[in-house]
Image (cartoon, rainbow, N blue to C red; front, side, top):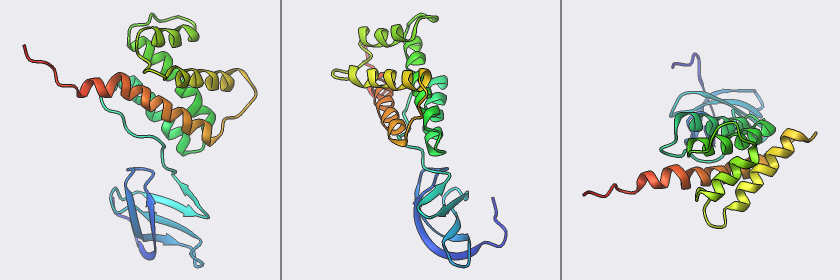
Length: 183
């Protein structure tokens, strides 16, 4: 990707909202007073608008998780990207939906009530010790976003993504990293 008439501008260090790398960019476009700028990422060459402490696109919270089934990976990315664009209620609802998808991927029958999926995860060892509280928090916040007239905050979304990430690592990533015993 080649940008036309890119200028040298005041250098800015930021985390690219596209590739997730911490970069410093002095290439792009800026207003005469340098309060608004579009920085071109030197790693993935995509543009980020940065002004007054705001960055668009924002940085998706959380980390990638390895060994996820495609549908769960897609929902987890959706929750993270929703938060990056300030769609916090959407992120919370997606984390709630992830619990149901995780339970079904681990053997829970489809068509159950949501609370039964949460209970399935807890009863079948998919929730780490002392982790029932996080899963219940995801459930409660998701229910609040679903059934009440309330909007979720950045903190709500970041907390649920962090809890969801740990659950995904516990169920999918960590087990996949254990070497298979040889007979």
